[in-house]
Image 1: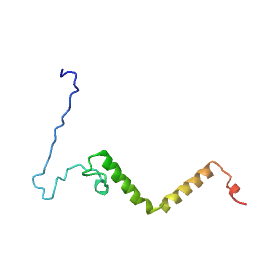
Image 2: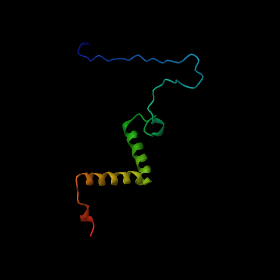
Image 3: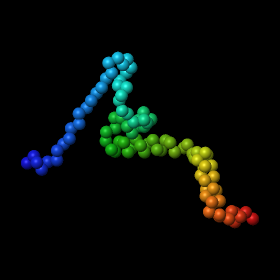
Length: 94
């Protein structure tokens, strides 16, 4: 009963190679911008190994600390917000 089966769509692949291009690979190949920085892309096909490599990468990157610029910007935005809503800052001073 073929009419009850959902139709499986097959997409045509178009591999364009320019005639006079001297470089390696296809210059029109679409890749993600940050794939060469990630360890979870590549040969890892299975979900468990992707999760484990992402977890190891997270463990390695924890020692970097907090970015000072982000903290300063957050404090400035908080003070501007408190000024806009007329919050009395004198409660913090003696």
